[in-house]
Image 1: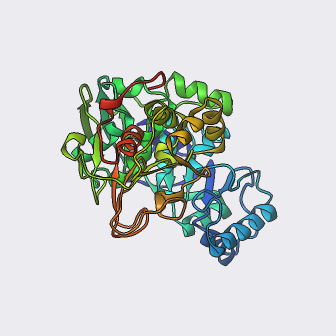
Image 2: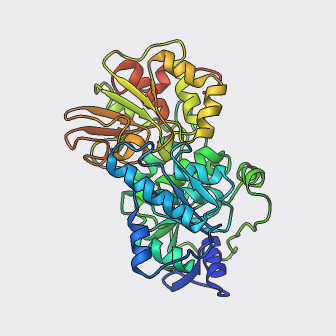
Image 3: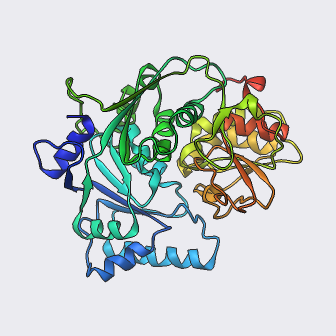
Length: 421
């Protein structure tokens, strides 16, 4: 069996499972974000009175943090009341950050677990060797009541990535390149395992970038064999009481792809598809009105460090805005301690509250009709970050920072340097 199948077999109480089977699994942890008040309503409608385990459920306020409208404030109010009523151990209010960042920081995520959340980018937690997947409000309501859910065991696609990136090209460029080659429907209801020499050497942040965007290829979940960086991170925050699932030597992957990233240039997903990807030299010089660095894809400390190094002692273009939102309060505090926040503010950046913000077009920096945004996030559909008449390019934090500096899409390799970069 594959490691993913072993996770599901353990959770289903079965000696083994195989792709295509329908199984009922016990969930190890469930998370509800503030887009999904309907989860509570469905919980009530189904006769729910008490959640199955108050220590294994959390609510995270990240999409509307802080509440930008009366309606979102009401959502938060009702969710807080539910959290208190149910006595949930974990609750992350508007001062904490994005769900996929705060849960690992809080020691909730570990290898071998099944984590479900009302957010499609729950595939991010494959970076820790966990089975992470997104569900809707009704499915989540049944999980809150029973602690169980049914799933079809996904087929596993292997994506092997080898090589060493040249300076100025980052993990975001790698996953955009992969998506551009394979397409947005390449992994529909499949699990993606990322492996190869490039992946083996990655730290936690870059691993999260790859797994985060697996869902943009339709993946049900993502997986990486935890390396020492991951095991150290998890043991410091969760402890060591976990078992890393290992794929059997005789497991045969039904689908495999191999990529060589030696010499890879910075990549951009151009409007309006995530898989419409091309090297930056083919789209340079496009004027940009806003650059955004943040979200569950590009708002970690390493991303902020890259932006600070590229902009330290400089000023962003007068016709461009740079919005930066740390992925969590922990990231914000550390970036401030290291001086990155001051460097970026002096360069002209606008720093906002940890959370999702304009990534989903909610607030803190949406774009207007006719505006162009270069974003370190994960989606560039029409209307994703504001007006349907706006245009979103997806790139790395480095591309976003340098493009803000120049006021147009720019190859960061032309400005590369700095101690953290």
